[in-house]
Length: 259
Image 1 (tube, helix red, strand yellow):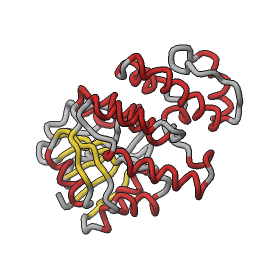
Image 2: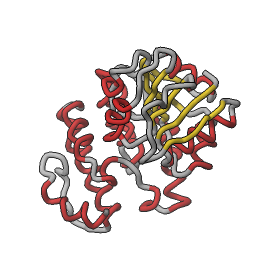
Image 3: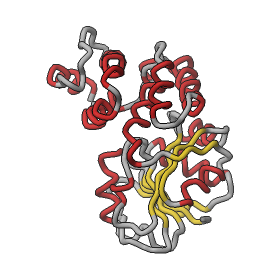
């Protein structure tokens, strides 16, 4: 597992590239949007897809399968079905915000918690970073990611909800505490608006809908309220309401302003 190719030159991809080099692995290259990925699985042991969630499946399908290469994605929400054509596949999701490559690489090596699934190489990579490793099955992926979003984006007194959601899939609050602490640090140093990440800030309604389908009904009002606060922070527009997933139409104009 010494030669790695990364697809996606954003904050996550660059953070992983820097961290992998720090621990002695060879990052062959970082491919970005517009680069040909057809033969990305050739001449390397691991390919890490670090693109936005919506692009993972198309990137995966564009790559030639190689039984000697493990293909991993970094998504917390997506299942391994997005990598179905590859014989060896897995996922590794750091429970950490990665605001830029320098801070991200440092955090990946500071006892982070990683949620992994699929090929054992995913666990091996997390352990190489010195991190804590938890296994999250595909069936639990949406609930896990909902809990992660609450911990990162809705920091205002919602740690109790993080604990309840985590317990429902056999995890504990400790798995998510590094994420929460780092998000608080970002809010303190960068300001809440610049520190905000997550599907509400991106206008990713598909992931938000999957969260609501996965979590218990009694948890949904608090989740809706948190998304509303995140959207208000991202756009600077007050009074946007709470039911952002069930009734998304009122937010179209807000998303246009954001982007």
